[in-house]
Length: 454
Image 1 (spheres, one colour):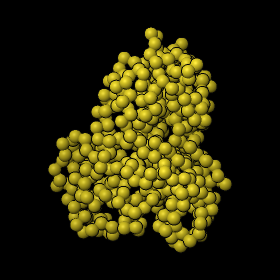
Image 2: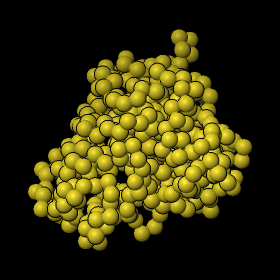
Image 3: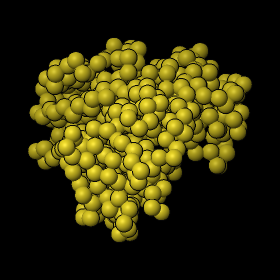
Image 4: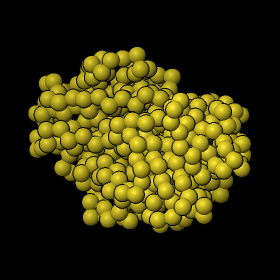
């Protein structure tokens, strides 16, 4: 029976453990440095409210999460958003974003005419996108790509906060090729993004699908973690256990847990952030360790607050708002959870998640929880015109948890993986080849598949 060590109990590590433990031919040991499983998937139940401390949904155009949830029998708990639309902050005020712009491929000039936060010159530049010469197809930043295709104003106001904001990143540094290759492919195939819209095969990430583009689970995403863990009876799960280093032996890999404790396995899946993998590999592949250390991560926080519905002078609309990087705001974006998903809060209660911290912006590591909440509450009450204090608040901190896929990230991963060739070691997780829940599941299951023959 092959022995497999999995380091990291987030969704990537759990997905790998699930696949490897099912056929009865692998002895799996999973190490998790914290006292719980699930990584950034964290759901709280507070005073009748379902509060997500991390992601609140999965992207359905990437099928791997939906597939796993269905395998686990969770399909009856699927929930689609009950609300739609969002706003963007411009000059300190919120403006609704019309559906024609939400997919970042605006084509309807009539819809653009009613957009108050875009100047006439900006609207003209957007509608002339089809005349812009296509790029080389090489990697470029998120900001560069959308600035080149639609102009500076559209890029700064919409594309950058939407696409870079998800990653708490700097749009001038983040790689389109690593994060949003579909847009590059559409440009190369059709010559422009506007021209791609008329093609029935063109369905770019972020463009409005025929069905809901996002799903969650009725009781929160932690239901996925619970369902997975229930399938891991044969897995040796070691919580609050953080291996120090990997050592190569004649027959496999030794996982050194402490000076006096180690286990030897036939293969290892590193389902931890790049900087953690770097430390574990430092004695076995120094070159790969150095490269992994170069993948930067940003710290973020989710400040969740609940207000009485009567606290607002005017009703909230849409699912939330985005904040461009050049706006004077401590909050980078916001989701109105109880308006987006059914059953998240009691009636007459508005549950809101505010996102804080970004690469090159507010450093939440220097702030206490109270300071984060004070800043979040102040921003929300001002923007949303609330005249009462929240009735509930909490902070979930994610230190060094958001990997920054900078220009050249895919080439960097190619180099790292080439240096690991010949070793029974696989990388899986948010630092490597996809950051969202579906991509982490895919990576975990792919890593497991490579070791199934052992």
